Image 1: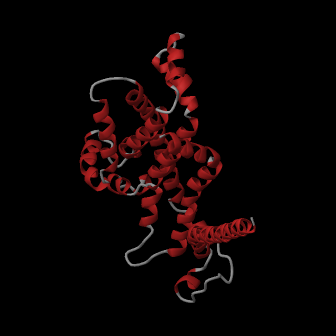
Image 2 (image 1 turned 45 degrees about the horizontal axis):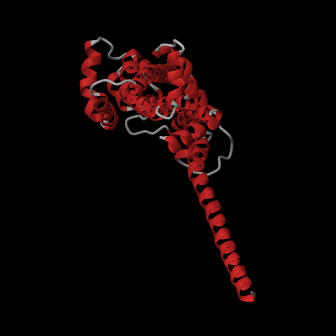
Image 3 (image 1 turned 180 degrees about the horizontal axis):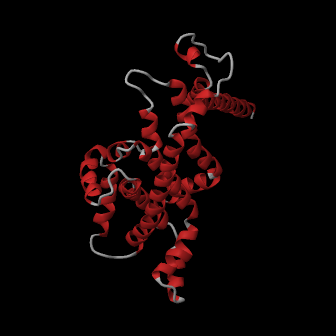
Length: 289
């Protein structure tokens, strides 16, 4: 009996040691990844409130005085126009991708037709194709439609990479909605569109939020298509506009850091506000997908 209690106590002590070790390791990793994430933003903010002298000549880590001139220069230039263009293009591409992706995902998931599996696999390959292979044919299509050098052309081009992603993500969520609910609605006289809008989409609300955020972020961060398809400075998106701040051999670090920091704010705010729905949507997709 004493031996058994000693063994039990030894085992409990071992578990406690292992538990404390795991807790310490977890906190160390959390601190590391928190610093890994926040330090670039902190560095950008510090650089954005330094004077040019403190950036280029008399370098200091902490600015001697707060200088907001870079932000003033930013908004007296075309930066606000670039932000507006990015917002309009990303929002339009996201809405278009969600609408078409919902129809496509529901059709592939619930309807039976020839080639359904091939189309589903084709979506994956379409999403995996690099943008550098697609921008030449896409440019010909946009130019043929007389939409080059226009944000409307980007609105049509961006769904080429956001739509397959939305469709594929929604397919995995739609499969997990009980089929009995849809069958009961069909028996009650509801059509397929009614089932989609009244049953499927409300139940997949967390998934729609996740897909919307990912789609918007992909469109917001896109660079290559905006660089190739847009030549006018007033039509550029913010990602290209920030790159254009660089002179021939001069980097306007203060203004570039201020612009990069402000550009990162909208996605961060969106993910923060929808954090609970994002976690719920990702968990649902991970468990049932």
